[in-house]
Image 1 (cartoon, rainbow, N blue to C red):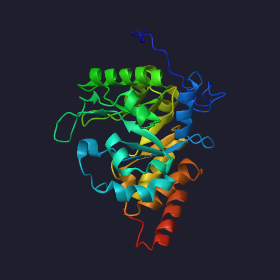
Image 2 (image 1 turned 180 degrees about the horizontal axis):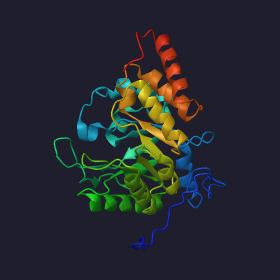
Image 3 (image 1 turned 90 degrees about the vertical axis):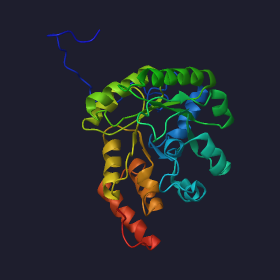
Image 4 (image 1 turned 180 degrees about the vertical axis):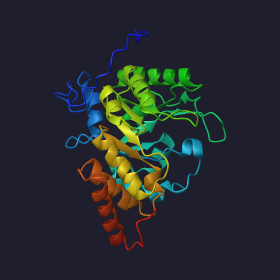
Length: 301
């Protein structure tokens, strides 16, 4: 039951205490899963750092030929050595990804929206579990809109994917979508991430916000922070550092990589934060040094 009027109990997120149910398996919230699910999660999350670097290039399914992703066949090979997880559609996977790459795959499983529509919240579950098995996907990525007009249908998509995932031992990545009219606040992300976890998502992709440490503490599965719109490189690296230092178990960078003038140097700097323990300033200095090795004229913007 929710809090009654005039009977408010203060929240206590116990920020000084780590997640308790994390032994023997190191991925948050995964102890009760079977071997196959844990194997997929181990492909996604580095066993030493416990973190992941995802590279999102699924934008084309609703935006078409996005700037920086016009030629996936040329972009991906340069970045591939520095990626942990490919976040993509099945079409891009089959046509532009070398099957010998040995990278984890977060397979975009929902579709039905496009930028020509005013409302992106009405999608369907377009990829079934058998297709995910054929592609050896490590998780199914399902877009969810909490508080939007399409909330019911997107949660039905998530629940259907969770049921299929449990049947075939494929984890589900719940993607918290934020529409133009939706707030990006701690209160909203606490609600959205917790809802998706309670409905069975094994990983949740969300956005960074003030008070993110409480959002992460209240969610019993790993959070991966989305990079969002293109930022100046120094700001994007600060976003990565703030996310990891406040409880995220990874970042999913798309436009902040493929729209950078020095994409390889940028993703290498992101890895230094996510897996190497560098802070944002140290990573930015590393980025500039890598750019200089490339013979670039500057750090990009």
